[in-house]
Length: 109
Image 1: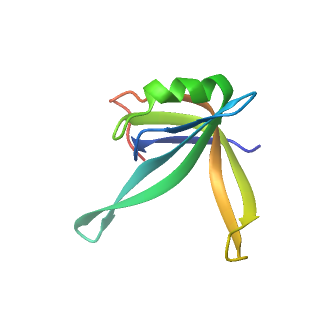
Image 2: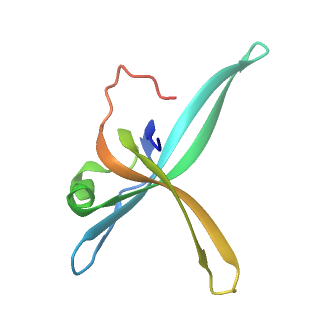
């Protein structure tokens, strides 16, 4: 099963693009992992690329604002393309099925 749930902060407002038959939203999400290294608490931040399509993408225009704590549910998608320098670029992103404001009581891991 390909299933991902992330809770983190939006890196910026969503980038919305409209096409003839659909809408696409892209945004970054920062998740934090906290752990102890000896007697020192360390925070590691990972950045995730999130994409949403259709009605969910349209909702992202008002839902996603920089810094907002979000819960994203979806699946991992791997894709690649050839850039202008003729180099193959590999991308892993989360294709969102559900995006909501996260409860403040939830941990941010």
